[in-house]
Image (cartoon, rainbow, N blue to C red; front, side, top):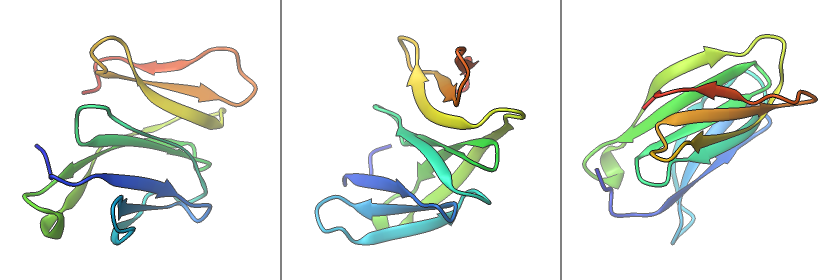
Length: 117
């Protein structure tokens, strides 16, 4: 799916995510994504999905759907709790980018969700 417009995602200390149009800066939508501050965000390079992580210990995978910018839907595809760690970075990994990878504060191992897409 291609919405035909470029957007960027911003995470806030309130746990809110906001999507803006790149060319105008217009606010497209606002999501109450986390109960505490957002620590990390990553948009997929070829799909309309993105991942967010927050101080609430959740890593959320989101999908943007809709036929136009005026008819967007943001759907939560999956939500994973990461107990005992503070996630500070997320990205899509592996050759086909079907996996998510997270880094955590003060820990030497990466967390991996294989074939999540």
